[in-house]
Image (cartoon, rainbow, N blue to C red):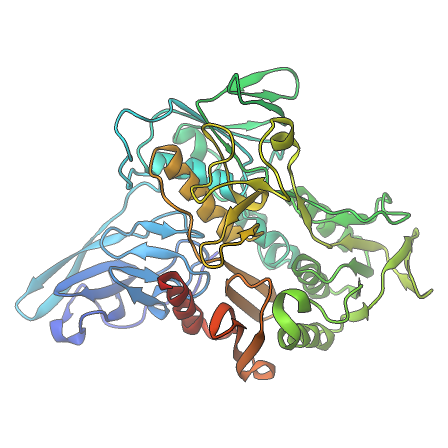
Length: 508
């Protein structure tokens, strides 16, 4: 998956004048057939690959902050000096290029590649690290944590345990391009098949059944146990299944895993009429994907406006209009009464034809392991600012963790892919003694047909919503205010504004 690789700009191998760039500026060019980003930091000229290693975003359209550049699409961040991927969702570095200055001319030279998990973070405390780390859950948080351990130079045992045989993979795509038929399954795995074994990460496709914090063991289904010196709980969440008569029927689906997405794709190939129960992000992205496959789609949800509780009235109306314009029929203010063989009966008596039903009403954190182990739990596994749980050498990250928000002082649980990845990376460094507070600004994106909403921050409540621009023209920002402080900013087609909002929140 990637962006436009057409070569544009000057031939940097041939050279450009030094005064073509002022300090803090960047220039898109190419060298030896590859797009290259040339940046000037003070008197230093630095060159890296110009394409983000996440989804191929154009780094030249991002912003420079210090000696880093941030991708405009999904807010990955790279070190301009080393190419290191400093922030998820990018997990691999970009290439670096040598740069030489001859008089007033800057020339880009040879490309310098390196392994994705080459040690790039120094170990926090020499000789004070666990010899073995077990991670339960190979989703966003767990897989990013395992990789970060190796990026920190950790040479001990790393075991990833997950009952999903396909994990780890790119979950956000399951409801977007992959489900819509615009992305092949080859895009879904996060890494090549032999990647983890090559880097000494043992992936165990098994179900963890218990954690014994006294013995420091994780019990697996079948009777085997895996010992640990440090443990990360990254069990994620399960989709909520509504207690509606008929929910057990074979044409009724939920979406969380790759297997779920495959099943919906297979069902969509035979179906003509789909009902999506729930106007959540997942529910609406599923609706958009099924419309892209040519199905008639009805959405049943109890709220009066999609996503109003999360995104406010203005964005809720905008999202609803996107779907209505594509032919989605909404039944808002209603709930399903029962699911029949070929229909869904709504609580007002309406019968909707349905040879495919998808339930998208949210998720619940997977807490059983943590609860049975005696960890402190309250609507999530409670962690401190270092993502440490109530048990010694046990951490939690991702959808399952409730952590202190440094900007509000509230404990929050955030169900965003990028947040989970960044939490996993922080937890891994803390396992190795870093004592690093998790203070990243939350970020997510949601795609609806050809419109994408980027959202930075976290606003469960707000005093006012300020809209700048025109949502109907798909050119706007929406600020969710508490007093005069924006708690979150959502943007449509304003990538630079989204990045700047993220920077402002970080600095506050």
